[in-house]
Length: 598
Image (cartoon, rainbow, N blue to C red):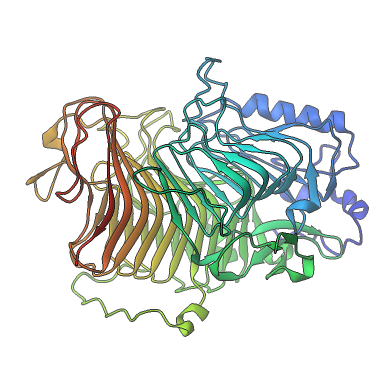
C-alpha cells in the first residue's frame, strides 16, 4: 500500500490526514502521531495507557510507535517507554521536537528496593530533545539514538542491576552516569562528563577530551578514537512541503562526534549529509493484511519496505535482490517464520539498509533467520581479500542497525527453534547494535526445548560490528571466518542450562565447553575491543576451557577482554585460548588487556 501523505504546506495541513485518535489511516492504529497543538490531557492519557499496557508486557504481542511532529510540547507532558515501544520525533534535527520529560524506570518486577533493569529489553527512543534529567534504565535490545538531553542521563534506576546497552549520535548537556550498568557502548556521542565504570564500558568516536580517562586494569574503560566507517540509522521525518518520508544519512568515515552538529552548533536542515525519500517510495506493511507473497511482490517492483508495528508471520523468506533497498521497521516490528524458512535473505551485494526489526524464531526449526549474502560452496577456495582502498570505501556497505534476534520465550504453544540466527556471507558489512538471544526465561524454555546452535556466523570479509551481544546458544555464541573483521564492544553469557559436561564439549569432544567468541584458524586478520564474556552454570558443574578462542597470528589483535563468573558452578578456566587466570568463584573477573602474537 503506497502512502500519499505528501504535498503538505504546513503542519496544520498534515492534521487532515489524522483520525480523531491521532493515527494516520495509511499507517494503521499502532502508530500514534501527536502535534504540539493537541490537547495535552488527551495525549497524556494515551501515553499513560500505553505505559500501563506495556510496562510488564515482556513477551506480549502488542507493538507501538509514538511519533511527535516538530515543535515544543507542553511542559506537563511526561513519557515512559515500555516493552515494544518506540518514541521518536519527526524533525530533521533532534532539537526540532522538544518534549519536557522521558524516562524508562525499572520498578515493574515489584521490588521497589531492587530496581532491576536486567529484563528491560525491546524498546527505543530517537530524534528528540528532552528537557530534563532522563532515566534510561535498560538492558539489551534497546536503542537511544540521535537525542539531545538538556539535563543528565542516568543509565540505571537508583543503581539497580542493569545489563545494557547502546547510545549513539547523541548529546547530553550534563553528565552521563552509567552507575550499575555491567557493559555499554557509546558511539559518536558528546556529554559534559561520563561517570561510572563496571565490567566493560566502551567508547568509540567520542570528541577529544570527552571520553573518560583511564583504561584497564585500573578502569574498565576502552576507547576507540575514531569510528572508521558508519552510516547512521534512517529515521522518519515530516517535511512541511513533502509530507512524511524517511531521511537516509550518508556514510561517515573516521567519524568523531555526532552527525548533526559541527563545533557544538546544530547544522541547518540543508547541511545534513543525507537524502529525504518520500514515504510513497516505500511499501507500508501491516501484519493484518500482508503476507510473504505481498511483501516479495513489492520488493521485486523495487519498493523499499516500511514495517509498521506488529508480528508478521512469514511462510517464505523475503528476498532482497535489488541494490539500494531500504527496509525500516518501527515499533519493534517482529518477523516470525512459520514454515522453517528464513525471514529475510539478502542477495544484493551491497548498499542495503536493514534497520529496526526483531527476528523471532518459529516453532518449525529454520536453518537461519537472517541471511546476508550467499554462502560459498565449501569446496571452493575463498578468494584472497585485498586491503581496503579509497575506491572500496566508495562502494556502499550493507548496513544492519538495531537488529534483535530471539529464540524462545514468546510462544506458548510449542518451543521455538533455529540452527543459527544470523549468517553474514557478504563482504563490506556494518552492524550497529545487535542482541542475539536464545531465551533463558519465558515460555517453552529449556535445553531440549528452544534449541539453537549458534547466534552469529560471519563468513564474509571486512565485516565490522558495533555493540554485538550474543547469549545462551548451545555451542559457540559467535563464529568468525572472514578476514578483516572488527568488533567494538562484545557482551555474552554462556548458556545457563547446560545439563552436564558431556553435552557441552567442543573440538569433537576434546575440549570442555565452547568458547563464546570463536575466530577460526584460517583467519589471518581480526581485531576486537572491549570484550565481556560471563558464565552462570546454573544447572550443572561445567568447565568452559576458554572464554575466547582465536588464532595465534600477528594479524589477530584483542584489546581489553574480560571473563567473569557471575555465580553458579565453576567456571571459566582461561580468558583467551590457554592464557588468563581462571574464574572459579562467584564475582571473579579475570582480564587480558592486550592479546597480540608477534
